[in-house]
Amino acid sequence: MNRAAPFLVAVLVLVCGCSRPPEPPDRSKPPALESAPALKLPAIQKAALSNGVPIWLVESHEVPLVQVNLLIRSGSGDDPSGKFGLASLTMAMLDEGAGSRNALQIADDVEFLGAALGTTSSFDASAVRLNVPVARLAEALPLMADVALRPTFPQTELDRLRKERITALLQDRDDAEAVAPKAFARLLYGATHRYGTAAIGTETTLKAMTLADLRAFHAAMIEPGNAALVVTGDTTLKAVQPLLEQHFGGWKGQPAARTAVAAAPQPPPAQVYIVDMPGAEQSQVRIGWVGVPRSTPDYFTLQVLNTILGGSFTSRLNTNLREEHGYSYGAFSGFEERISPGSFSARAGVQTDKTAEAVKEFFNEFAGMVKPIPGEELDKAKNYVALGFPAEFESTGDLAQKLEEQVVHSLPDEYFPSYIRSVVQVTGPGVEKAARQYIQPDKFAVVVVGDRKVIEQGIRTLNLGPVEVLSVEQALGPS
Image 1 (cartoon, rainbow, N blue to C red):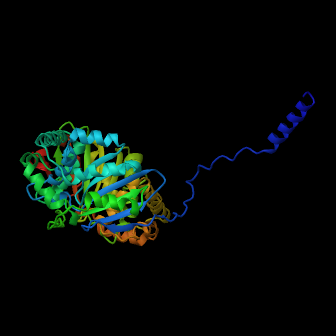
Image 2 (image 1 turned 90 degrees about the vertical axis):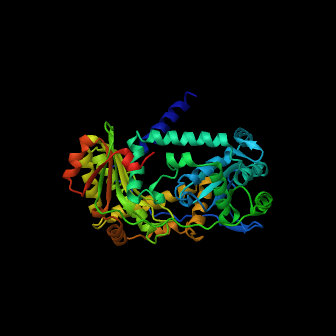
Image 3 (image 1 turned 180 degrees about the vertical axis):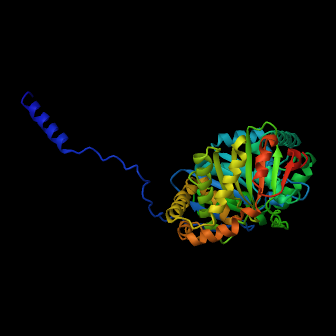
């Protein structure tokens, strides 16, 4: 061993002497952008129940879970005039009692199966969603069918949910961050347009709702002619179709006539609203106008445009207001994607004493969007959108919701597989053209929720347009 030791030391010296220390990373510039890889998605298998309800299935066998979503092509956009909030409340009530079970029994049975069962509603659609281990699918589907098709609408549960929602609405009126999006929608669309009121409705409409209203909405809108079943996960069409037929195939009904939400006119140009909240810790800024429907042919161009403007952490708005000036923790922008044109808005919570300066920087960035986009910035934005897109398909639930989007908006089967290619094909001139069409700051409505006595004079000196000062009640309407 003594003779071997010097030999080992020599070998170690030789090895260590010949090896080079690793090169330090080059932090002088960002890593080079690589082209986005193509997104490969499993094929959509399609069938139908005996009552005509479509089945869309995508197999994914990595995890022994199945997602089953009953999609209803009705939502808050179908709320009758004077009953805003009806769709949202109806869907929330479905799992508060169904079939022979009360709310607690439903929750217990779902937990026993190791499942998750929920209901949801948006302006364009509603859904009952079940996620369950594949071994328990046959036991879970009867429960899901009861919740979707046979709700009992207990009066005590309606009273409880109504009280919770009214309490939340009242609490929101003391929070500038909660007031701002509601005030912006109300001032942009008006009190009678459906998009002018939040999906939850108002205190007045909620107080007026009855069990008869909920039952009537359920009977009219949640019916087979208005539905689709979306299935993803560890199953096959051969295995799941008989189960779906057993529990949903006997469902009868006729689709009610639906009236699409009317496209709203643009607001009066360059109108500025100050919503007074004395003592507000920040000013909440919302700037924009009526945008585009989800079906716009400019969809991919607008995804890239918005990424540059305010759709990412390194966007122009966030870099300006957060990183360069320190006015805000975050500034963003976006288009609401609905069947009818939703809003475009740029938004931030900003320092109260820097409100006017922050609003001015918003308009500086709007003006910059109509100028030629540097090639590197354009490529960075396209890669941000393209490389982030596959993450939207990570789980069986994610995949099912993308299929829901495809159904609701009548997107072709090749839409998502070709999504990345469509993003990569966006051009600089296309973005500039879209910016001239959709980013017209001289026509934007400006809504600032904050302490009037601190912010009003500075906002007026910007000369953006007529300034109207409102109370929270005036901006949101009566409770």
